[in-house]
Image (cartoon, rainbow, N blue to C red; front, side):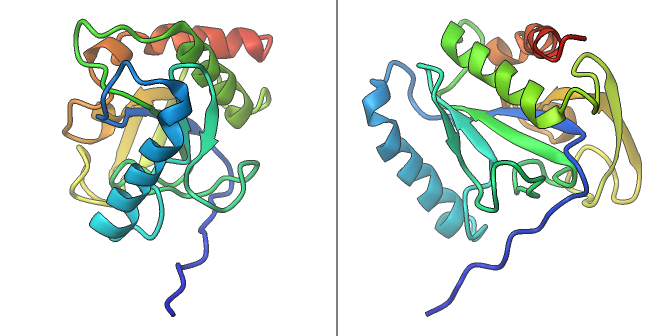
Length: 185
């Protein structure tokens, strides 16, 4: 029997990268565990990541689920943003949020609460920028180069993709502001 490699940890979470799962919208929140099993199968077995790439997933009702194993209170290095996983937390909104899609208010609220908690009030300001060093030429930044990104970024900021979709991406400034208020900044 093979075992998954042990979780890797960063010294701290310095930024949040927001994703969507590209799964259907309009789901009953009671069906989310089946969706999570499908995401796990695609990531762990389809992509050989040994686990879900995202650190957390959030459903339309605002329920937060642990993704990648290793401890929710630790800076687990995910497999969510090629080249920029170290020191970032990957948060995936369950659904597809292309232009015109509605992003549920409970989901936005939960993502903001999660960002505020993972960044720590003593850490990076969710409204600011962060400098990260790319570890892969497959990101938007050559390996070894620095990238200055919003502390609350969309997947598309660091990787050539449409994720987290135009509708969710347009909500990132609001998520950042909510997280800052929760941190009493």
